[in-house]
Image (cartoon, rainbow, N blue to C red; front, side):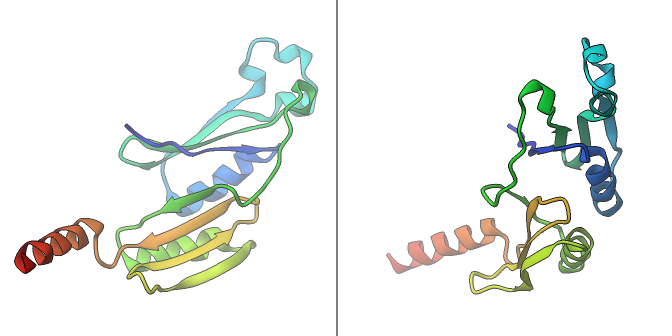
Length: 155
């Protein structure tokens, strides 16, 4: 199973994803509402909105989005009920991604070593999307196997 976070925007999905691509890399794919059947019934502004945008974010995984169409009864509500959590392969990469994506946004928690062992930070980007960046200083599998070994030795 693969997880592909999907975001909604109102008219700036492509702009947001060009920004994300500038930090995260990958090939940006964009399909406009004008490419869909029935697009002739949409306003000029809505025809130019993104029907689907995506960039790769991992092995067969993608960050995806589209623009909401008010004419179709779609409403966009931003909130902190969803975060995109990225786990880079290094501390330097965590800093690079955090600094890049948080530019122009609101930092909730700056990157710092946390009591649970990870290097972690969170923010809302300039498009209203919430992110968590976490570099695992001790991989979870190592923690689990160490705990299992300690439990076995104590018996």
